[in-house]
Image 1 (cartoon, one colour):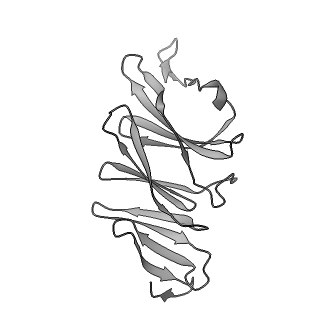
Image 2: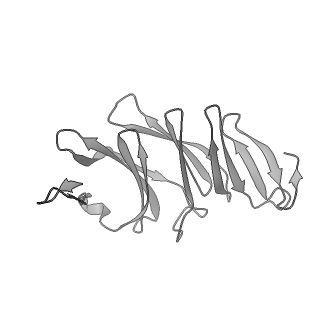
Image 3: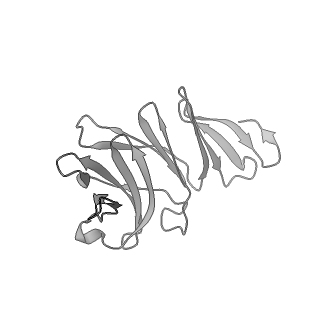
Length: 172
């Protein structure tokens, strides 16, 4: 935001590199002193995460050069009209879940760079809900298996803790 002639805030455009001019906005998440933006690149058929940080000297958000990373967030790992992207902060870590993947995003050893790590991938799975607490995090997934149509995956123990057929629970 910048100040207009009457002191009112007005939206400010952020210039992206020329090769990213055709991006479709997906989601923006406030994390620490940053804005994490997910956009879809139709040319490359990829969802991309951008790290936008507040530049104190310029009093505006800037795109970090190191802050562009590809995310596998769609069930078919490509375009999805309205992807279901879940986000939550747990113990200073931003968790993103979408399609078959769960990502952990945290401040790197270099304060100007975020570390993005995929911590779970389930082929043909789809993240439906993300639950976090101070002690744990879990994701409810829809799976292709008919006997375990829905699963709760515990991110700390890295295992399925409960499975459902849809109408009743079954053992994990």
